[in-house]
Length: 300
Ligand code: HMG
Ligand code: MG
Image 1: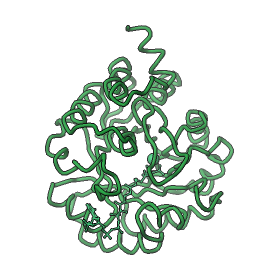
Image 2: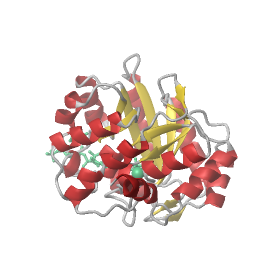
Image 3: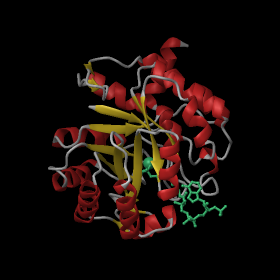
Image 4: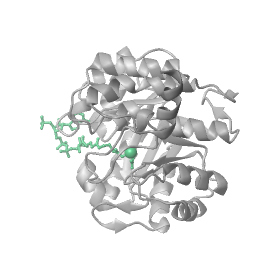
């Protein structure tokens, strides 16, 4: 299984207390030192919409050498920023629900796909592209989303040339049976990641359901369980990376570094548990991820 660490992006984007670029670089360095190989570092979005990530263009050149980095791109303007900075992996994001994309990126799903098509026609050789499908289970504005509504959006993203797909449980309302149903609908989709939020504490159960279904090559997770989308009321933290790594290791599942090597225990769980602590302290947040708290209680 691969792990895409989204803490510096999804984890911070909704936080009102400004975290400096330097603090973000140190956070990312600690994640890299813990052995995290793939990190979604920031977003090239409007600083008016997401003030916390308004320093993206300053952060990018300061990223520590080592991990594979990606950044969210919502539109042509964000893509131009990515090109100027030499970004080699971008993440385009749309959803299974118009009501959500309208509030999140000021476009319908169809409009977003049209713009992504224009963007990808100018994609330089070697640039990898992830496509997110948010609200794959429920939309905060229009309600439940059926698996059959997710499939056409995934197909469109693949047709446009996305190399990987991330299925977003934006609200954290998925459960194991709905995960199995969506996995069945998407069973032939290559390079699929699951992006569970943990609002109701079901993210780890959903991970097991996805793995039992045999669908997907990895999971998105956020150190310390930080996270939430500013345009999805009710969405709280992501699946904590600590809980994910602890689960995978206890099940004896190897972690794919995304760079062609497989390792049984490439992640230092103590360093990972420590990585988000300074950020949590800055934000005035308690440690809430179960595995993080348990690991830290042994080392403190
Ligand atoms: P818009 O209002 O339609 O854009 O916003 P616009 O073209 O009318 O421009 C408005 C202003 O934004 C202008 O500035 C533009 O220059 C500027 P002004 O003239 O007012 O000074 N602007 C930009 N600035 C920097 N970078 C850009 C950019 N584009 C325009 N790329 C826009 C459209 C997409 C920009 C806006 O809606 C936006 O930034 N949305 C971002 C929302 C967001 O980041 N949401 C969270 C990420 S999604 C998520 O969390 C879900 C996920 O985790 C999966 C899951 O959990 O399901 C991925
Ligand atoms: Mg998210």
